Length: 189
Image 1 (cartoon, rainbow, N blue to C red):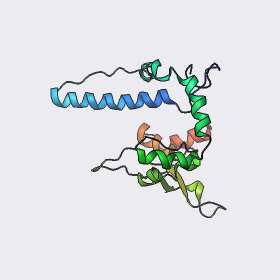
Image 2: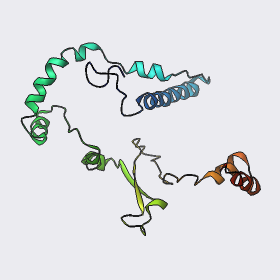
Image 3: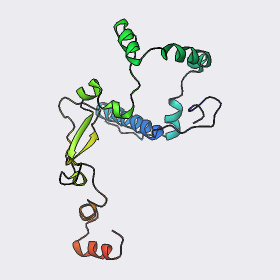
Image 4: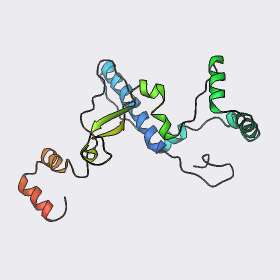
């Protein structure tokens, strides 16, 4: 949080839960590496990973931002003189890596996001077409992992509150209808 936000300002929280997200990505990679080792050597292993370690691993060399305070005002002044399209149209043919900073509502209109099917729609009870202004579907974010032989399958939309409680308690805990009715009567479920 110390390196996020305005220079000289108070620490600022990152918009996304980056520590948890990145720790999860590192965990997935570690699991794959451990599975590969197990397949090759026949030996399993313990994986040790922490949120703090994941955060520390994302810190960058201070030299990358050494001249930032002098450079940013110069760039803001220069870039602010022309519309966004001017810079994108001019820099792209020169092979300068660039892209627009999209507002959230612009993201899902981006041609690459559309091509990669990063927005999906699924039927949902709370989006019933019989309700005014509802299409019967909810827009969701697609899986970024594209596998050729086992593509992601979208079987269920996000559940409503308590939608699968009975199912989960029956299947996982082996409860019967009588036990569920007792929990319901007590206001527990």
